[in-house]
Image (cartoon, rainbow, N blue to C red):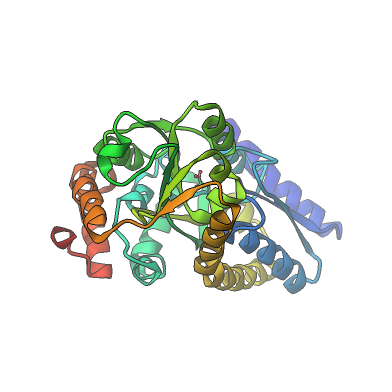
Length: 334
Ligand code: LMR
């Protein structure tokens, strides 16, 4: 750990040093999804604005599609100072020792983007961000993606259709429990490996947002997709705290402004991006898309809502309650 802190410190010093020599400060922003997604577009918008507002004193290099690091490695790289910005999915903070972020994985905890924003733009979101600081990480913003669908090579009409199926999930205990509640076998896997795992039958199915499904071509290797909207995928943009605090104050202020506007932009297009992706999956004609009936949706809710109670000890009963309060959700009415 001491060596890690030393390396981080040196990385920060090196950056300040290059700034003094009139070289641009380079910010490496690594992520795992395609450029043509809400996160991919948000990262490019941040680059554009950061370079504009700092008048070229900062150069942002965006590495999409796991070209620099995969899920797990990117978090280690951030802590070591080898990369400066990431936007991991909220489901991927558990391995960092911040389990509370998995609260966002609770099935049906958000009905829509408005309810989600009551949390991410409100005090609960701020309290969650603060939990990253003791890990040497600073949270800069919450970025939206969208609501998840389930996919497989056999039809998914009711929870029992997933019984015994191997389903790829992100590295979240809440998602593990969610898949078990459906009778499925959860398989944690890096995002970059999902397409191939579906293609070769290493897993039978998965869950994701439509923008991720389409841009990773998962629909080409999954015959059935059900629009369950059973959970949410979004991100926290994070940076190395030592690096961030070592930046000249005026530059940090300009970057904060760029982040604020990139967040407004990305969160403004997320819903539409996912709607467009649905149309593109439909047009590709390789996947049968099923819209659950009210009765089918009720069956999924009946199977999945008990996960909230089960995961209280993992994510915190108080945190779950504060989300219910913020959104007005009454789980007994789901
Ligand atoms: C996944 O791993 O399924 C996604 O969360 C990837 C992402 O960053 O959207």
